[in-house]
Amino acid sequence: MNWTYLILILLATLVGGIIPMTIRRINANFTIYLLAFTGAFLFGVTIMHLLPEVYHELGHNAGIYIVLGFFLQVFLQQLSHGMEHGHSHLPGENHHHIAVTPLLLGLSIHAFMEGIPLGFKYEDQSALPSLMMGVAAHKIPEALTLITVMIHAHKSKSQLWQILVTFAIVTPLAGILAWWMGNRFELVSHYLLYVVALVIGAFLHISTTIFYESGTKHHELSGRKVLAIASGLVLAFLTLIFE
Image 1: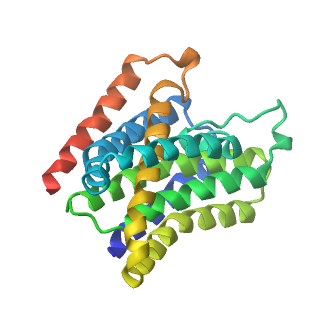
Image 2: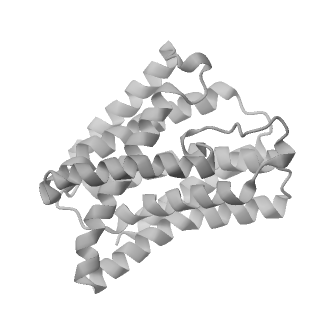
Image 3: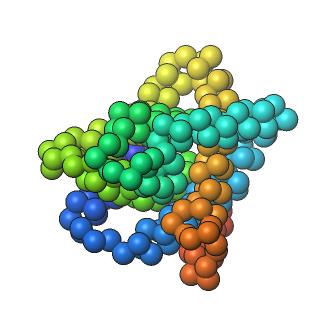
């Protein structure tokens, strides 16, 4: 277990949440392009590192669990309202009626799933550092959106910090738990690979949704958003140097 990776993910989450607490008027384009960049980076890391790993180990069965993970994420976003891919609009016109509990539950389950692959031992030595960077990058807009919505829900400063710190801990904690149980129980170590395949499906859903939806009118791809996506993909390609 590389504790440095977990600390970096924790810090990235805290930074993302602190942004809306300190900057009241965030330029909408900043969030759009940040989401596009981090979504593309996560997509590239998933395709180039995680996907080959699970197909090498599980063969064609990997596809079954990837598809299940994709639709598991579809279910989770019914609770989180798509916050993990940047959606901050919720049903109803009045933000006073935000259903906070299911939102936090759905987002926390997603955050826990994100952490599980961090505790897995990969044959590809470049997979873990690349995954860490992808998850850390994704955490910044994710936490930013979460705290923005909580501010609109009129949570107090202390409540915002409690929510942010708790949320920031979930992913590293899942990584530690997966690593500990995987080393202690051989059966758990074997089945962790299936969970990684589920998470791949979730990552593919989130990243591709970001490409075409988050923050744009009529779901168009502007030139600047295409540039942000291309930059994220190029950075993902550069992670291959870790091999």
